[in-house]
Amino acid sequence: MADKFRTVGLIGKHGDDGVVRTLQQLIGLLRKAKADILFDAESAANLPSFDLPVVDRESLGARADLVIVVAGDGTFLSAARSLVDLDVPLLGVNLGRLGFLADIMPAEMTDRLTDVFAGDYEIAERLVSNAEYRAFIDDGGYRRPELWLSEGWDVRGAQGWEAPLYWLQGDGGWSQFTLEGERALEPDEPVTHVSFYEADAYARWCGARLPTEAEWEIVAAAREPAGNFLESGRLHPAPLGAAGGGQFYGDAWEWTGSSYAPYPGFRAPEGAVGEYNGKFMVNQYVLRGGSCATPAGHIRPSYRNFFYPHERWQFQGLRLADNA
Image 1 (cartoon, rainbow, N blue to C red):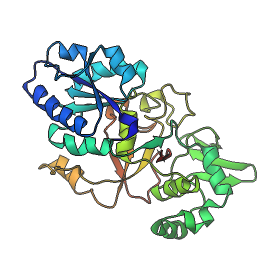
Image 2 (cartoon, helix red, strand yellow; image 1 turned 180 degrees about the vertical axis):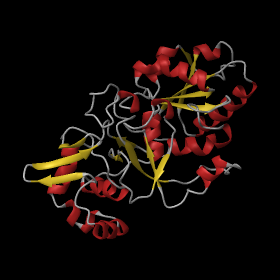
Image 3 (cartoon, rainbow, N blue to C red; image 1 turned 30 degrees about the vertical axis):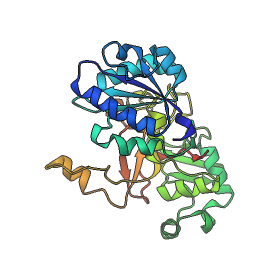
């Protein structure tokens, strides 16, 4: 197990027949990974203690590196609210009906959590800004093939890319065409309208990389899904802190380094949902977090958007990650 998650806290919903069985399986997985396990006192009052140390909710959040909730969305949301001030990541194993927030199904728990525990990494707390991306341009980033994937370099040349889409350079410097027309480029706003190829090249120029979607979700799940969404009325990315919340949600869809492929065991259902989720799982990359044009009710930590790597028209940005 990665040192990042040496101590894991468990919360379970009482009164569900599947909880004990799922917790037993989960505890076995954690013990195999040599994790220290803490059990929530509220849960232990109605469930077996499994011979684990039992602590109150506040102590659980303060001592654990990760908390796993075995329940439905209601219990997961309640746990998130009680732990929000302790900045501890949460994952949910779904035993409810929807699985909107607690989205890991018991059947895929081993595979998904093994990925979580696999390695150490660091992820930036904010999106890359216009000023930072401009430094990449000024350093010849669009003229340096060693920074680019081969296919991205070819697309850059064929499309004549020299900057993000909607960036304009004139005698007075850089400007940007927005939904309210052309205006001066704001250095502290998140860079947007970049392709996967550009995001990947910028990360390589920084000596970093794009996060995987699993890495992004682990960190984002500990945060309230709040930020600069459609309801703010800005319809444009905002500097960090300007619209409330952090920058894990809203502002710009974030490119990850993960291909849009099915999770283990997924089968496309019949009808429109299968058409949408099945046929497009090829040659695309996953984006996370929503944008300034996304309704707040549309997003959740596990929501997967996807685009082809050359596309730039959406509010698409990036954050950096690296191995610890």
